[in-house]
Image (cartoon, rainbow, N blue to C red; front, side, top):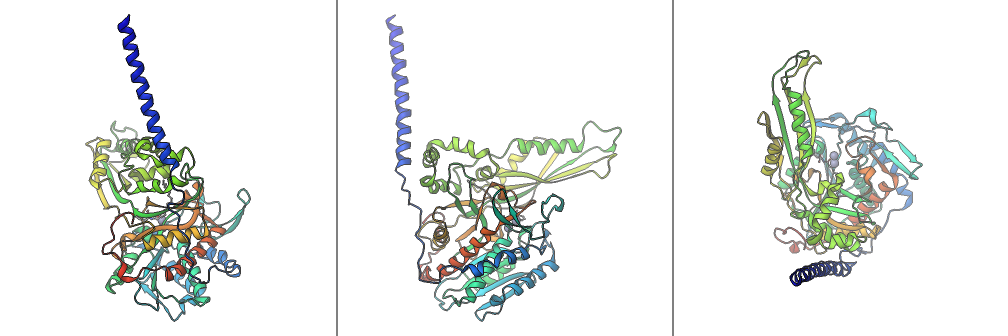
Length: 525
Ligand SMILES: CCCCCCCC/C=C\CCCCCCCC(=O)N[C@@H](Cc1ccccc1)C(=O)O
Ligand SMILES: [Zn+2]
Ligand SMILES: [Zn+2]
C-alpha cells in the first residue's frame, strides 16, 4: 500500500514538474512577445524639402492612360516568340503619352535589341552611385472566354460590391503596372522641373514572361559594357499583401530580398498502343497520370526556418495580433504549428517549400488510338534552402516507377540574399517611401515565390529588391497569369505617387560613393 502511495507521489511530482516547465516556457514566450518593440522596424520618412506630392489635376488623367496601355496585346508565348508588332506599337504609345520624358535634354532613351527600352536619367553629381528601376512590357497569353471583361479592352468598371473603380486587362498587375507607374511618375517629374543630382536608369524588358534572354539580358550587357555598377535595383515582385498573412491585421509589404530557383522537369512514359477497342492493361496515360497525381499528393518537404525567408517573422511579430504575435516571436517553439497553418493556403505554402505544378501534359492524337508515348512538364519553384539535386531526387522517389523517365529540362538556382535593414540605403529608401504614404504598412524582407528579370541584373549590384507598390488581397493575387486581372484606380494613383516620391528621395537620401561596402554581405545590416 505504502509503495503504491509512493509511486503516486512520484507521478504527481513528475507531472507537476512537467506542468511547471510548460508554464515556464509559455511564460518566457509570452514575455518575449510582450517585450517586442513596436517601432523596431519603422523608418521615418525622408524629408528633403522637395516638391512632395503630385497634384490631383495630373493624377486624374492617369487611369485612362493606364487603361489604354492595357489595350496593346504585347503577348509573349515562348522564348523568342513574342508579338514584335505590338511591342513596337507599345513603344509608340509610350512616346505619345510621355512626350516630356522622350524629349528631355537629360534623359537618354535607347532601344535595346530592337524591343526593350533603357532610359538613362542623367544626374548632375557623378559622385553618387546610380540605381535602376525595372519592369517589363510583355504579358502572358489569355484564355479570352474566361474573362468577364475582354482582356485587352482596358475597360474601367465600377464594382458595386467593393465600391471601387477597376481597370481591367492583361498586364494590369503583371507588369504594365510597373511600366506605367514609373513612366507616369517620371513624366510628372520632368514637367515639374525636377532634374536629378543622382543618375538613375529605367529598364523595360520585352520578354520577361519567357525568361528575359532577349530583353533584360541585353540591357544588363549594355550596362556592364559601360562599367555601370548600381547602388540598388528595384524590379517587380511581391505586392503589399492585404489579409494574406494570418495574424496580420495591417498590410504587409514583403520586399523580395531573394527569389526562388526554378526547375523544369520532364516526366515521360512510353508504352503499348493500338486500337482503343482492345486497350492494353498498362496504358501510357494511366501511368503518366499516376506519376503526376503522386507529385501533387506528396509535396516537396517544408524548408521553413532553414532559409532566408525566416527573418520575415521577426519583422512581422511586433505588428501581429494575438495570439499570432506569440507564435511569430517564438519560432523556436511554435515553428511546427506555424508550418501547419502556412501549408494550408496556397500562397503561404509557396513560402515554405519548393512548389510543384504540372503545367503541360501531352499524349494522344486521336480518340480511338491508344497513345504510345506521353509526357508532362512539371514546373518547380525551388526553395533557396533545398538543392536542385534534392528536388529531382524527391520527384524520382515519389513517382517510384522505373518505367517513368524523370529528367531535368532546365533549371536556375535561387538568388543570393540582398542586404536589408535600416542601414542599407536601397532598402531604407524603398521602405521609408512606403511608410510615408501608408504609415500602417509593415515593410519586411521576404522571398519572391515567382521569378523575374532580376536574374540578368544580379551582376550589376548585390542590392536587388523585388517589390510592387500596390495593395493586393487574395482575390487580386489569384488573377495574376489567369483571367480577370484588374487593378483598382486608387492603386494606380498610389503607385505613381510612390515612384514619384521614391525618385525624389533617392536624390537626397543617397550613400556617398566611398560608403559602398565591397561585396555587400547577405542579410540584415
Ligand atoms: C508569408 C508570405 C506570404 C507569401 C505570399 C505570396 C503571395 C504571392 C503574390 C504575388 C506574387 C506576385 C509575383 C509577381 C511577379 C511575377 C513575375 C512573373 O510572372 N515571372 C515569370 C517569369 C518566368 C520564369 C520562368 C520562365 C518564364 C517566365 C514567372 O515567375 O513565371
Ligand atoms: Zn511580371
Ligand atoms: Zn508574369
